[in-house]
Amino acid sequence: MFRLDGKRILVTAAAAGIGKAAAELAAEFGGKVLATDLNLDAVQELRDAVSKTERLDVTDTEAVQELVEKEGPFDGIVNAAGVVVHGTLDETDPSDWKRSFLVNVDSIYFVLRSAVPAMVENGGGSVVNIASAAGSLKAFPSRFAYGATKAAVIGMTKSVASDYVAKGIRCNAVCPGTVDTPSLRQRIVDFGENIGDYEEARKFFVERQPMGRLGTAEEIAALVVYLLSDASAYTTGQTHVVDGGILA
Image (cartoon, rainbow, N blue to C red; front, top):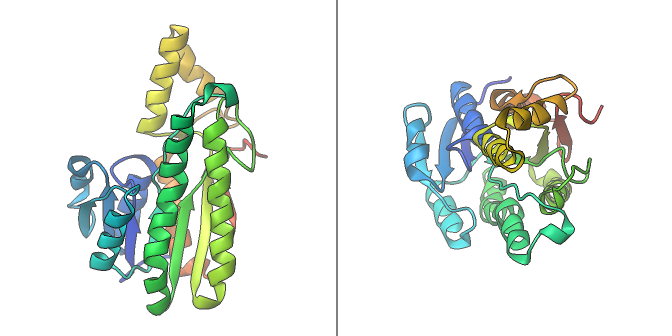
């Protein structure tokens, strides 16, 4: 029931972090995984673990359409591409705002608009969008643009779930807390440079977790694979929080 045998799974941003962990675990559970990323060299490191790797710029609607037409239809999609912009309202300039929405929101629209019609014709499938505990569920300091985009992801998720539930499509959002990924590690480095102490910067991120530790990409991937599988066949339109107790 928890297996993905024979299911064709598209994973975006699969070169690192949650996307990589999801691609690897989905393949381990029998999925025929197409792992994509803007960084072709990095995603090709997965070529022995997944069925296929491809370069994909999810902000390029024509590139997305071309890949979907060539490789689809899919039984499952994991939209994992994302960027974190630090800053309050007055610290967020228009270029950062637009980039945040392009990567975090528009990319999901491009992928789903291209892939969902064929999924419907193929009998349905499961979509998993990586949102965040930051956004409509909770505000975090200096995450103005990021929080806005992740709230939008939840809105899109629920809309797709409602519109396509009778057509065999399930759509859920996974909302991680603070997860130990390359993206977070870079943010810790940047914060450490700002305050002049890397260890204090890392301590700040760890200590705000009720569990006293960061999450792992593999822990998030486990939920993603469950939502891709038939074990979650009665689940759609939900925000699944994996945050180590932040929202408890």
